Length: 476
Image 1 (cartoon, rainbow, N blue to C red):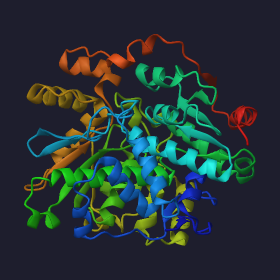
Image 2 (image 1 turned 180 degrees about the horizontal axis):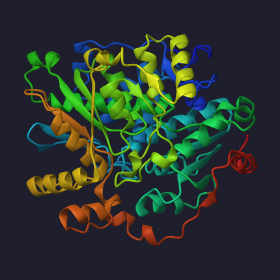
Image 3 (image 1 turned 135 degrees about the horizontal axis):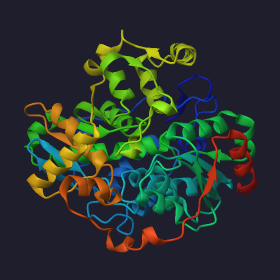
């Protein structure tokens, strides 16, 4: 398996190489040359596997240049009992009629980002050791990516992490998780602005190939295909668990739909990859919050990102994103994987601030299976309350966005699975508003909010960021 760029300017490269690159060398996003297709018999043969074993099988289709024994060890270490609380790693539990919850927040930072980041931490360290290279991760986070990356990479040999986050735009818990770390290879930078400003700074450094090469820059944001491929695993797992009770002769035609709270489009694009690989997914439903640029795109075919001033600070802050960095991968697919057509679309975006794909929009559902919807603060509060009242289960605000939109897209006979974003303990204020219940931190995190915090505040200043990274970058 080799990988190419959406923009056509990168020679096909193996998995271990694109893990270190993040963005493609021409500034585009990395994609598989072709997506492997599995038969119903192959899917069925994976039914009895543990999560780590399933991850080895799925990722083995992507990481064909990594010896299988090494890959299996990395997956065992990533999805170990030391990292994930639930015995099954990803529990799938009924939530209400027609809707089940895919529990992706059993890891060390209580968020779904741990699912891919724990594997990425293992695989990056492995590849660096093999090639005797160093890697300086520059990332941007709206809440959970930062802590998941830092917990997966803290203390790793030959790796430093420079994580950009928007000042005042994350919950107190999210800030404490990141800023309380004291590892010498972890550098937190709070940028004056919104998440999109952080992401733009990150991309500016990566698009300067001379600076990128001089300082061995790498990415762990969802632009890194290593994360996207690792996230595809839990779509396989979710279908297998949802179909466990289905008679064997009916499983091949058993479809599910999946609702995904989404801001940067990486998580749901992983679902598209899984669907394309053969997982029987009928619909991929994108749930947006008030920053609903992606919902508007899927409903109208017009993609029109908003500026910082028009990006709302909401009670589901990890989705406060108006410029989805992974959408380029979907547009690449829609435009027939044609780099020239993609380049024309991106020129249109640069010149007019929008991309008009209204002619292609009917294919979004018919061919690719995408639908979407929007949730507001009032919706989140009402959904958290209704789920709690009916089942006693408390969900976080992002997952509530997912449940609200999932309810609007239920189809008879098609189970709907909602991907959990994070544990509700990370967002106690809205949980109290919705339920009147105050939830405390898990026992192993008691005292987290009281720890000293270590963060560098910085203006939205590319030159200042370059200097900061250059002075602290690690090398071999």
